[in-house]
Image (spheres, rainbow, N blue to C red):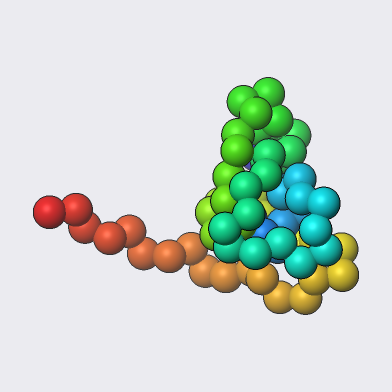
Length: 71
């Protein structure tokens, strides 16, 4: 996979939403080319390193969050 910036799915062009401004709780399929075959259903708050900004959406890319230790 290409080396993209981490970001939330709701702002990614691969988040298959019909809404112009998806929210955190919306669920849609991830259409990233290398992941498409898995038919992943993700929420707008999900995120990954394959983020590419949606057309007309500014910002949205972040540094990957730190892993939270599990107790």
